[in-house]
Image 1: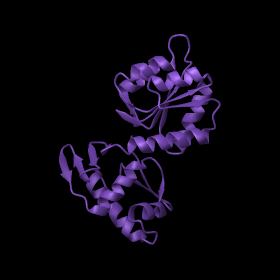
Image 2: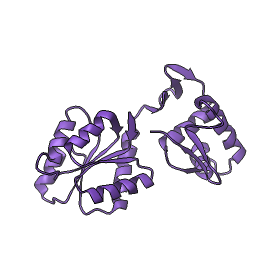
Image 3: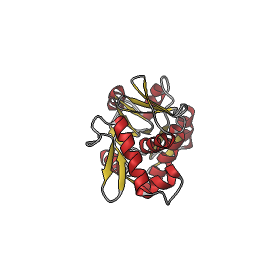
Image 4: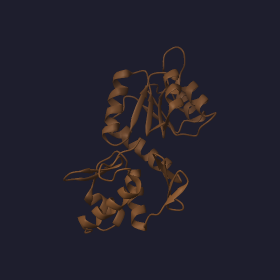
Length: 225
């Protein structure tokens, strides 16, 4: 089951595709579904952390219908996106479980900022990060692989957690120094040693890593669904 940051449910194909590409370019992995059937087909096989939901989806269903159906089983954040400006529409969207109402046309940069803010709050409530067969427990600070603990030193844990939380986004060495070590003068050698130790613990072949990949001249990227 693949994990996505955002699912867009909207019958405006050109706008949705451009929004998907823009979000993904800035590290928010996004998928597009054109209608209710495509939405629930996607959710049957994938996970997403947030849904952008249009109201007008053709004659067979509406975003209101989808929201009501979703709220029977999940509290995932739902942001309505619509050209409809009626106060009644806004109030109904919020009353049935929407978390926000964003009017079209929207600036992609503003929409992305709103989405990132919601994702930050939502993901902040998670107690574990998962990739492959691994689970990194954010409470106990333990790394588990199918129930077996893989010992991590304190800085290895902090580095791995930051990498996963920023998965699929290129991370410069300077960003890692500042946000993991809290020290902009940490040496490349220190970072390289910790990366090597992590690879030895989570990679099948540390010399050909599946997760922690080097971006030559820049830093690293943690690749995972």
